[in-house]
Length: 158
Image 1: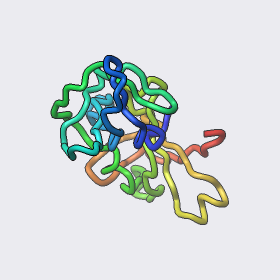
Image 2: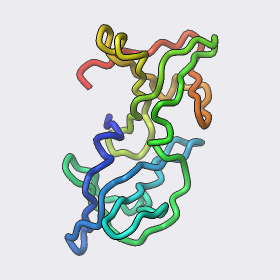
Image 3: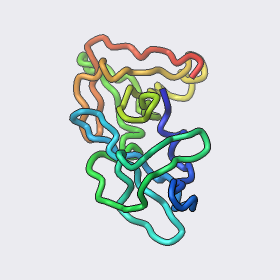
């Protein structure tokens, strides 16, 4: 799995020209099927809501993201940065913490889960938790509801 914070800030390189066309400002995903729809670019020259669709992304490496086409499009979906800080509850109404990051599958095509913090002290003593996508009951604009009794799995080695 990959964290979105590992992708945000990467330089974006054009496969054909070899030029750096900008940096990843945000990752966008479609909530219904949890598929990544594209990225938003941050560039010297412009600030735009347009971005690169996922189908044009050839490779997301450790140090750069490589695209096939530099054509910008409107990218539908939710900005990952808008989900950070949202509250996580279980079906019993117990708060489980706040979203700190979103995990993607290895190819960065779908949302695999969420990194959840229960506060600084709990993070230091117990570590952050992880909610897998299969445990999500509902996902709204500002809250995430997980299965009844759903406990965060502790992150180890991530």
